[in-house]
Length: 263
Image 1 (cartoon, rainbow, N blue to C red):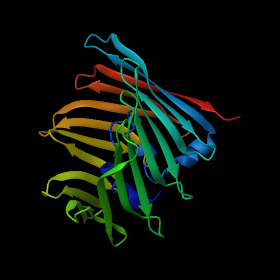
Image 2: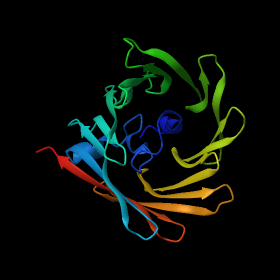
Image 3: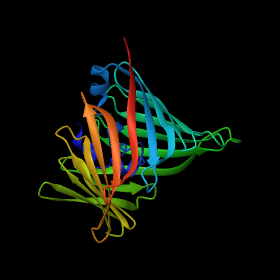
Image 4: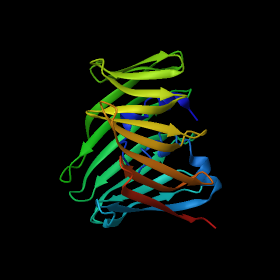
């Protein structure tokens, strides 16, 4: 896995997609070999949400994904909890299985978001560009741009189009700490994987297996009081189930992963 890229994944990709916090399909597509070796063709994620009495209140398909034979995810469609289609995403990669383009289509209004990624000769991410196109427009307009700066072969800071610092990173021992431009601690990384993130009044902490896949997520408030915990189950490297429980052990939601395979 390209550890350098993992230092900045949370800056680029939404972090709450189908329980695996999107690190499951990160920019360098580190797990494509798992899908290739298992001959995964497609994936459906089935989600059940529970009320305080433990009864099912929502039951729906949350996500559908298609894979190329080389293990790259090429397309996905995500759904709202009423099973209404929300958006589609198309992915493109370079010859190193790194994402070079994601194109989002919002199905309710048919507007689109496009992100392009650029790498140097050492396959390090150096630029990302975000574009938007409304349904009544014929071209994409640049909305945001980020440049990634390196020291000692790791990301040291992220700047915008005006060369203003958006995030910067400091190393202490085996840990990397990510800060906003206002010196607010947002992320912690260990062995190249994020293990902590702060989102407003909520903190998420992650436990991982030897290949970096998430095993457990702990959600707390700023005082460290546990609000919920999520647990991940795998088979042959494939995520099969995620369950989330509140502080009292009551089931909040469950996601089950159903795969189809190439012959």
